Length: 371
Image 1 (tube, rainbow, N blue to C red):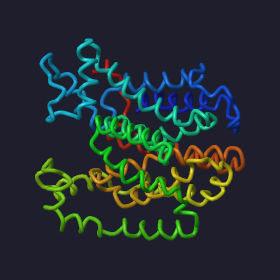
Image 2 (cartoon, rainbow, N blue to C red; image 1 turned 120 degrees about the vertical axis):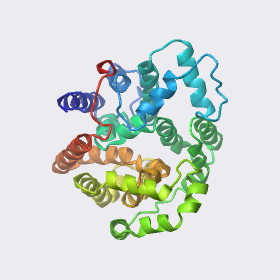
Image 3 (cartoon, rainbow, N blue to C red; image 1 turned 180 degrees about the vertical axis):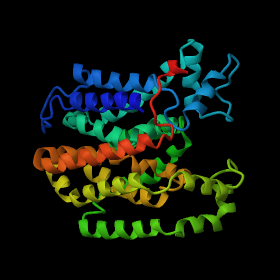
């Protein structure tokens, strides 16, 4: 646990400080390229800590076993493994004889560079977004659901092109994403939603009402009962026979994710972000902030409904991971206008992250050479 505190503490503090090196709210800065010393150092720290990890992320050992079991005869078109793009990428690293840590580090670099590149014109957000990325638990999602998380990072980048002018670029990114995870098909319906460019959740009171109702539903057994009744259909259509008894599997996962301090701390953070959402939208007036927020709010509702069921969380990653974006904007706003709220946000986030790590659900940090 001590090693985890040291490593994660260093990761949080260093990325926040490096990202906040020039924490000025300005879009007129001409020098908005990424390759500045403090930005590059931040990217490298994230990459190396991600590369040197062992068994951080529930699916880590599965990906590790797949990489180590590659052979010269491995066929990238083999559909029994992964998607073509991922198969091709890992095949190249394997052929070069590179250690698995190099491969995992490269994947982590792709994830973080996509996020940073998305906000290259708003680099004042880097420190805050990095802080939320790690303390919200999104870091463990990136380290776990590696392929899908990479595609979600692609989606975060693609949102800016969800307009008539960016149609071809958006769908080119979607095709690229599909080569790494089939869930990228969700890019298509989301394009239509984003193209409308409406503030669907303008009223804070209405948001709180909806959030409260969904919270109440999530506290009941309604969702679980529906899943039980639809067990066979879910197994055939969604799970595609990956699980023999999806109801039994869901029951196991529910026992693993009992709602406790982690859940309610995150609910508090969501409520805080919702309450100040109107002021944040006015303060930044970003071209894409409304789109980000629409996705975030849907994600906050999905969090309430799917917390107990890991399988059902995955389709909603394209919404829930926008917490790191809205959280980044909000933390910056609090720091500039309401420092007491900034300290409250930081305190609750660190407390949440500590509880997350302490759960020891493949969260303790271990270096690969320790095994």
